[in-house]
Each structure stands twice: as structure tokens, then as C-alpha cells.
Length: 207
Image (cartoon, rainbow, N blue to C red; front, top):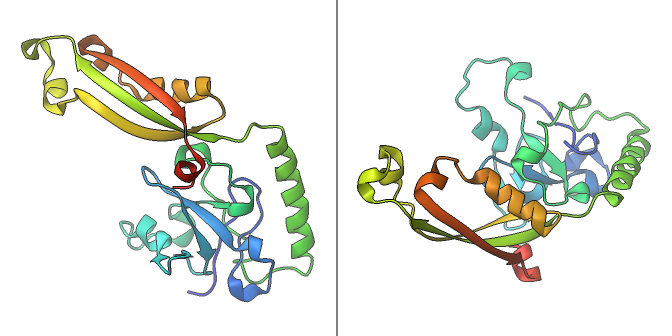
């Protein structure tokens, strides 16, 4: 298969191959995958992300290796955001990327102009939206009912303890809302769940 590509899930700018002679920012992407941290790197034109560490993530094969014989247009689409427009979104925050009509390589002469126009529209929208910041949560789960009173699923989960996790949010209230959305309602009957959180430091925010 020759070159193929997608559009940035936020801006609609077609992501290009390094061989296309386009501005570098049109190749610098963030790969968003379910329940995994974002990956940053260069799109190679063939469904792979090349990271700064020299790793190659074949996300296209990874996404569709369970669908042999399926036509290209029916395969699952990745979620890609050009790094220029990335503001800490997670997998759930963006739609699947649309296919690139020019395959990331066979571009029209005015591609650069079109890309910049779409970039201006996208960045103008970002300016009116608070930039998400990274918050760290420290969650304590204490059992309030006796073991014999727990349902089978809760008893097997062995939930009591202290956990740490992080999320991107535009404010402390937004971060807290995200936390509450992750707590199964059934757990509230058997456990006392409390959370302390703080904004991540610059080093933690880049990890």
C-alpha cells in the first residue's frame, strides 16, 4: 500500500508524510489511544508514529489487526491531533480522525495556504477555551460495610486503599467532576470514597 493519512481531529488539517515537503508542524502528531497515555512524534506516511526516542508505533496495524479482510474504508480510524493544536485532550475528548483525501502526500499546490487557514480558525477557538491543566488525585477508599454485606463484585475487587491518578481539566471543579464521573454508583453504598488533589508541577505535567 502507498501513502495514506488522516486529518487532525481538532483542526481538520490533513496530516502529511515527511516526504511531502510540507511544513514540519503538519507531520508532528499526538496519538490518542484508549486507556493509554498520549504518544508524541512524527507521522511516517504509512500508519506509524516515530517518537523522539526512536521507537516506532504501528498504530494502524495495532488498531485493525483483529479485522482481517475488511475494506480500508470500513477499518477503525485512529484519533490523531497535530501537536500544534494539542491542549491535553484524552482519547474520549476527540472524534476519530477523518481520512485524508490526498493521502498525506499527493497534495494540491495551495495545501500550505489551506492548512494555515484551518490552523487560524482552530487556534482562534482555543484562545476562548481555558487550557486544560494536569491535576493529580490521591483517592482513599475505606470500607464501611462488613465483608459479608458486600456484593460479590465489590468483595472480589479488594478496593480499600489509597490510589493516585491524574487527569487534564480546565479547573479544580472540572477535575473533581471528572473524578466523580469515574466512581461506580454501587461503590458508594459500601465504601467511603474521599479525594485530595492538586495541580501538577511543571515536571509532572510533562510526564
